[in-house]
Length: 287
Image 1 (cartoon, rainbow, N blue to C red):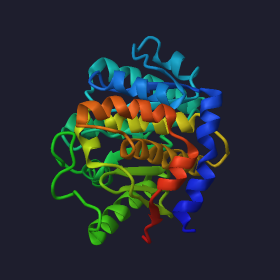
Image 2: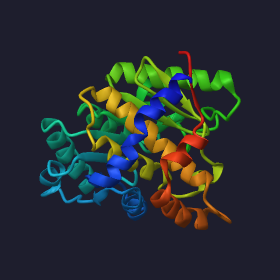
Image 3: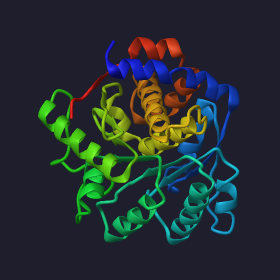
Image 4: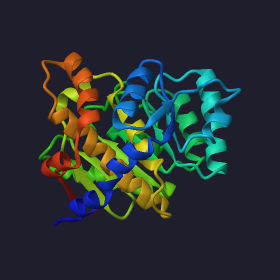
């Protein structure tokens, strides 16, 4: 058994625990994806609340068991609400995930990202271009909210995957957190250990909000707080979220992105630990 498999087995009981406890998760994401994200959290077995009015976001954040933040489709009002929620969550030691959607697309998003990183999220998520933009604090990168061609790594491209793994690990070490770099191969690292997770289907990239939903599912598992080590909690939570999401996509009966979006929710609600164990594909990357 490799290290990725061992960590997966450690994380797996959280699926049943989440369905039993149904934790409340504060999901603050863009208008283009919020409905899909809320339905994904519900299908998994948790309970979403998507409050984003600045006058209530902090109050809601401390009632929830976890907070999920995203730069997707950012507005001035939601930025204000998210900053208040993030500050309240950090003060109350509530787990927080941050999705750096499109951070390389504009100076505004890069400025906002720095503010959210200062709130010490337990998990940072992004594609390869977004993670590099955070690491290098650089100018424009990527293609809107999509990964740039120069940063894309496909399965089997070992040298490219290793370079991305090292970038993700460097960011994790600098921010003292866990980083999830999503792509054809999902890379998950706490700065010391890095896992390459190889489930999933390319069609997921054709569904608006699929990445945002993954961030919300990671927060849902973080809400369980089964241990005291924050980084280990984030690593196990994101590992299980990625596996649940990607295996649900692999086992969905679909004719295209529209039917996959619907079938994903159905599969998410029915996926079992046995199915996940049978299909899990992951290994450690030596960084």
